[in-house]
Length: 324
Ligand code: DGY
Image (cartoon, rainbow, N blue to C red; front, side, top):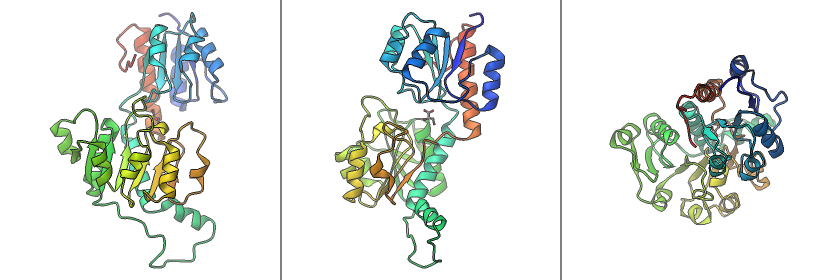
């Protein structure tokens, strides 16, 4: 493909933008606003390649409105692709790629951060101190729960779930159980110390922490619903770094109100960046703004991976990370 026209839908780390502009003269989103559906459809009509990301609504109406346009590749910056209607993309003859692998370690680190923060009441402590309310050390001050040696239940045992298991087991001596459609091989189970649970119910009933690492699909929408929250232990915590719609947030609020669980730590939200106001003023909930992969190392690597897919597409080689 000669001189492809490329649009980048969000600002990217400087080295990545410099690279994609130097190679392809890509058009950047100077003010980093979130593209509307109309802007996305227009971008697809006018460009051969859209370097998109998870804030872009690439659902069927957006893609249908781009029919007959130039776009041939959606090179997604990010591993999750629930914002893209793959069936509609296929109908339009669009290839779709993502950026797996390069954000695994940072997202796993971030999950441990959330586990520790919610169990050790880090948010509460920091808010108290910054508000000038800290009156000094005392034996009963902000007592949390121990993490080391506890049981971590991991739902979804792909790259990130496994990296979390390895950290939890090898670093914190946690007992790790996991639930996934496909069992991991025995070498992976040995390396991560993880034992497969035959049912989700069994995992929920025995875990002190439940961490979500499954993709967002129609099957996993509201996987954590009222019935499942009621299966958790009253001292257990829910941690979500996957996608917001895996958790039914109304049921989560009820679970926190009813003390069915001890707390939650969330990095992702249903309909983000909107956050359910009923979560905002709770002390036993840690809330972060989708920062799982937010290190300069991961974000540059994600950009380079997206560009590697573009390079392959332009030179008509097999796409390294093709998902459709
Ligand atoms: C992804 O890549 O899908 C992540 O959610 C970004 O942090």
